[in-house]
Length: 302
Image (cartoon, rainbow, N blue to C red):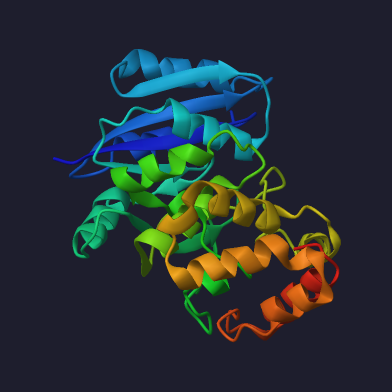
C-alpha cells in the first residue's frame, strides 16, 4: 500500500479542522500521514490537532511555530517532511476529501511514465455548510502548458498529489518564502516532468469569509483580487524565473531556458518586454487573462 504524506498549514482553523483531518485519515487504499505546521494560531486549532495526534500518534506530526503566512508555512513543511513517502500532497484546513481522493490521484500518476509527476483536479465549491455551489471546469478554454500556467496558475494546491522526485526537486527553493508553494511545484512539473489533470472533483472545497483566496466569495472580492493581480507590484514571476535560471542553469530545456531568461530580464528594456509579449506560446486561451498579463508586463508588475 502506498504511503502518502499530506502537508497542511493551519491558522485559526478550529471550526472545520476536525472534518478535514478525519477525511484525510480515512482515505481508502492508501496509508496517509498528516504533517501539520500551525502558523501561529490563537484559537483552539492546535488543541484539536493534538487530540487527533493522541488517537493516532504515528500518523500525525505537528509543529507549532510563528506566523510567516501560508506561502512560507507550506515551504517550511516541504523542508521538514521526510523523504520516506511514495507520494506527497497539500491540504487546506477546512475542506472535506472524498474517500478515494488520494488513491485516485496515485492511480492517475502511475498511469504515466517518468519520475517527476504532479496530479491536480477540479473542485466542488461548497458553502460553509457543505451545500454545493458549483464545480470548477479548469480545462474549459484553457491551454495546459508552462506558458499558460505562468499567465494564470488556475490549479488549486489543495488538489495536488506529487511524486517523491518532484518533492526533492522543490527542496532547493524552500528558503524563498515569498514563492507560492503550489506554483513552484506546478512550474517544476511542467519543465521537468508531467502534469496530470483530472476533470473529476474529489474535494468539497469550502469558501467562507475566512478563506485565504477569493474564489466563490462574491463579485466584490473577485474584482478586488483581479485589481491586485493587475496593479500590485510583487514581481513573483520575475523573482522565480531568476532563481530557476540561477539554480538550474544548463539543465533547463532550451525553450524553457529562453522563456525564463525573457521573464527574468524583461524589465531591462522595452525590447525585452516586446520579446516576451510576442512569444506566441505565451498564451492561456482565456483572453482576459492574456490581456491582463500583457498589461502587467508593460507596467513591470509581472
